[in-house]
Length: 94
Image (cartoon, rainbow, N blue to C red; front, side, top):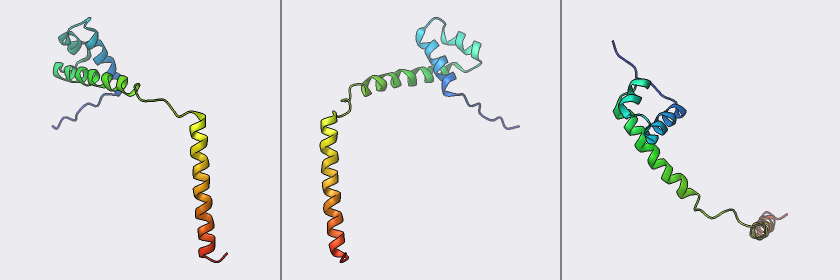
């Protein structure tokens, strides 16, 4: 009989990985408690640790543009669209 793989939710993986990171219980104890192979818990723990670095790296990105910069950008877009509209109107003889 073919055994299908068990799928775990992201919340469950995060919960188990967080407990492994905390270190209050060993990976072997977590493995018994959740009926998951210890190598799977170690893999989730590594993925969580790598993901944490990305979360904090994304916060270093500059924040949104100020309202003045956004207004300037919108005025430029309006000008471009006006020129395109006038060009097309002349091209089609309207």
